[in-house]
Image (cartoon, rainbow, N blue to C red):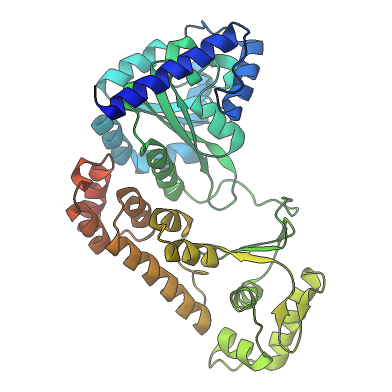
Length: 411
């Protein structure tokens, strides 16, 4: 037995030992992750660890929810990629609704049979109060990618499984539509599993039709302190956790001030926002006045400068690149900086970030990062080709997906 297989076997034995201790009432607090322990407690109040299968929702109701839904449209658009991933890795892939009810599945030969035996099929209810602890429920409940390995599952019927799940959200509204899950047998556990689930979830998100969900009428509240700007791929501003509703020019001005913490003079800011366009200084002052009011007065003059903690995804991506964390940088990179902006300074900054990300990938073409990047730049074949030419890529779980991306771009 190789060292990796031995470590995996030891991990499984430890998980079984902790699970057995818990179900026997002896406790296992020090042996399992907190989110697993919390889920075990919820599961134990409602489900027997010897449950044989997930309960099934009404078949016609499930079909009705799936038919014509945004999720169905998105899955059909990327179904060939999903099926190829399942077949290459002998996985079963599932997509759920927000209640963790399975709406769609596709499986490789071995896993398809295993899935059918436990009702991991359309209509199966996989919330932890129905069938015990699993990755689908954790990802749905916490809104973050989750993994559950072997006996971390509460129900013994899936102790031979490992599952990775990631939320699927409407990019326009942030509404969580459900989760995407990848499952296989525990002995096929691979470090890239969770990243692959995130990639597949993002693939579905990018294929969603125009949002079917209205934007919230009232500002949303979060606990984030200071000013938090999302500028890559979209524009979103939160101040002390509250979403600010700004027009495009106000978003551009705020972005420039955030990216120049030392402050800007009226003339500098005007040139950066408008370039050679014939726009009066009074127009810019009016926009700044609106921003100052929205920020509770925390925007000084002479020079214009923000007077609160500021975080931008631009700074975050560049910081990750400087530290050599290419995969994390690509994951955080949402796309073009304020798409459609005509601010010359922001266009220049956007080009700088895009080139920095691309050059980092060419220098270190990590397969899962290249898959993510190819979603944002589907016609940049050079990065995909560099990745496929790198040692070890052709044996990587996402190699088939990269080949598909390259073929699609060359059509």
